[in-house]
Length: 210
Image 1 (cartoon, one colour):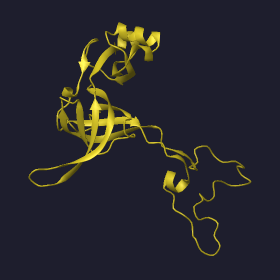
Image 2: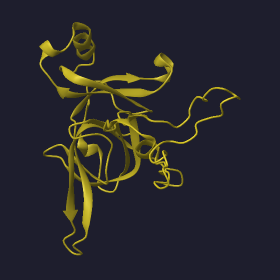
Image 3: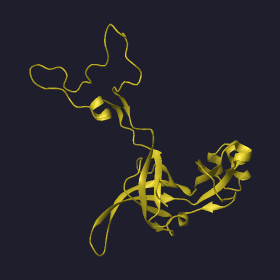
Image 4: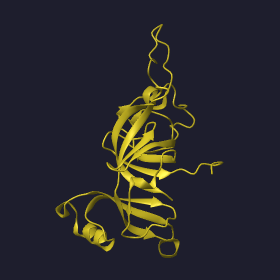
């Protein structure tokens, strides 16, 4: 398992010197992430690696958090993220962008941009109703259930509500370039979350791919 924690800085484009083709790029400031804890199936029931990200002053953390980081031989950090899967990393090591190479297939997880309360057309891509002959069903969802039987609305019905603001994993991405001096990962395509949002970059092992 290969992964790192970072912060989405934004999007830009990179032009090919020979063909001039523009490639959309997401810039992620990733690591360095010290390894705080390594979980194994024998001791914890599953395999995972716990990484720390974004160094901060001691006064910004609680005493239990500071004690946990000291036990993992790490300085105070704001975020602790656990990445599932087996790994050869050990406590005290530091994960940097050097773990990735251009062409690596990755998936990026983050909290999507919250858009607040939205109707069914924006939230679920419903089609609007007719706008002629006095129709009152222009942007409404339409019928959501029968009146007599079952006399209620079934759970899970697609209706208006909160849109965005939940964890999303974007698969099928590729590392375009790696800047080791500035701890930057250039990922081809868009990744979830707003600017400065926390993201997890992990290698993707798709079916049929070596």
